Image (tube, rainbow, N blue to C red; front, side, top):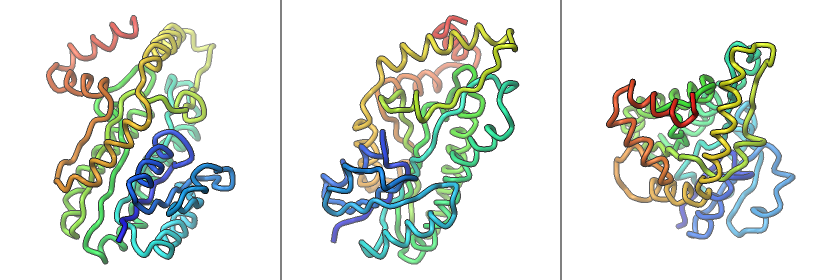
Length: 271
């Protein structure tokens, strides 16, 4: 019997690449997104259910999981992929934007997780793969919100692994580096106030550095393959990096002390 994976945020980027890769590998795929009516590619594939799931809408979460179980009988793997990045000076960021960043990247992940846990517990098996980032291990300037959410995902996932083990399940964390997705457009929210002149040199340096970083970004399929490894390797490994840049960054973060690593980031951004 084919296994089934449910993916949040499958309309583009990492989520879509993962849906296509698992389908090619013979899996059943529940590809969820906020606007499934706009999807034209995944709907043509065999054994793929495209359905609505908005991580801010509890009813849509419940319905998507139920539809996946009804269609394929069981969900074996959950990929918590939906999310976006909010950057900019904290002083320039409206409170509602701060709350939305954490609601989507953290509370949304928790709500989807809670919704599927009874199914996993009943089956005494299941794998939860949470998409973090190298940004869950280190930070870029002006990223207090985005990095705050990814640091939270790291802590939630590691702690959750203990209770998941108690019900026969596993938690995996995938940490991509820079990936060629729409993160810099539709998945990127930048807040700024040019009247706060003290921050503007840093704003300019961030955008200059990001252009260079994104030019060398990896394709989403690289992350999809790492997600597949995490779902199928049968190990208790908790963390997986995706992308050569991610491997270098995380190795440096492990080997260097705070002062040396942060100075390296400053040098990269020309601060």
